[in-house]
Image 1 (cartoon, one colour):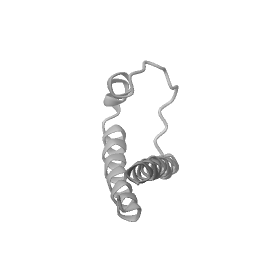
Image 2: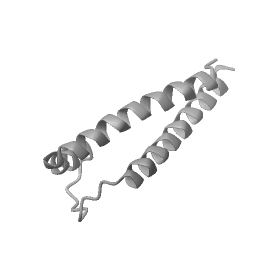
Image 3: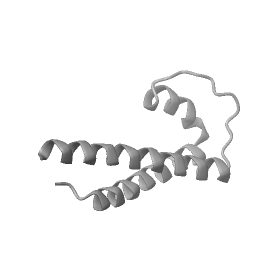
Image 4: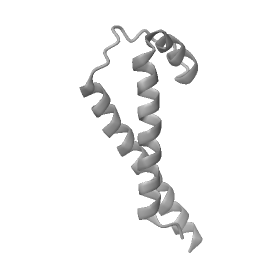
Length: 84
């Protein structure tokens, strides 16, 4: 069985590192934003003005951690269910 607590700690650490690196790259290199939209997010949507603020960073950080925790929780629950 997969240890849920350990899996959640790992995913929170992993997604936090990835989010900070990606957000930092986009914030520090503004010319990379169109490339990121096209090749990383697979879209060419014009999102209007590029607003990079601490509030946007914190909000995205929290949202992505919640999404990651829910995904890992679901995976662990399903995996442990089928192992029984």
